[in-house]
Image (tube, rainbow, N blue to C red; front, side):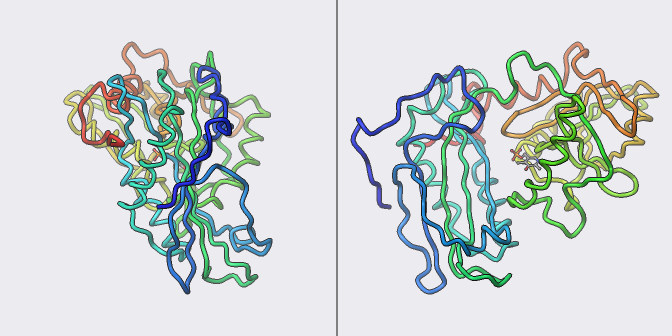
Length: 358
Ligand SMILES: *Cc1c(COP(=O)(O)O)cnc(C)c1O
């Protein structure tokens, strides 16, 4: 690896970590490596963050040959810096690359490169509750030719951005807007991958939701209005079942549900919880209405490494508003999940999911 260190005077002043706007500040250094069909992978590099040159015909700018990841580095109570299950993000990035016919990379090697970058930038990892250093790997096809075809050159790079809590100060719960006219994933599509092309078209409906006074978009699919997710989050429902037990329901990984690392971790964590039964099954808008009528729906929340959990308190669908008592529960499950995950992120619980950077 080639590392180009600049003098201390050229480094940025650290921002006020208590007042960070999500994803708007980047650290001093980035990682990058180029690939081309003729020479294969080039030398991996860590350089100061700077704009790079890209040909105006580059395929990523025309046909969305772009895939990314989002994970975080956390400063633990023991001052160690940890990543959370980074191998799952690398696996997902590889799946996206495969779908775009970008070459595979060695994911163990890439994790080592990311650790090296984070270590160099360790002073940028905020030492605050719910704050972290966001790691954003991006992989693009850079081939400067206009055919909709396999890219013969590519660029893989990683940016770091210190982030505070995802929720703005004073935020308690989300009002979500569902419009069956729009979908973010469909069978045979790519909604289960973090391809950039899955996100651009969602901004329109996100803005429509905001204009109507809602925080987030509840994503639906098909004639039955299956719920597939909320904003850029997976979705969970806490339901009281016939026998009075508590079920935690989340849509199954059927190609239209996003395979979140947080989702998977919650599913695995709950398997050890005796009082909660985890159930992976499809839930439609009609199911939600019925559960609300029967007073069985206790909580509804989104999950992602960006927000951890995000409680939902109302759904707006087809001209009606439906209230969910998520934040009125005595000991909500979403809160318990947030705590269990944060214990691992911040090293309060010893768990192999927390991967120290050295
Ligand atoms: C990234 C993302 C998530 C959350 O994934 P995590 O790995 O848990 O951070 C959920 N839904 C969508 C659509 C996403 O893009």
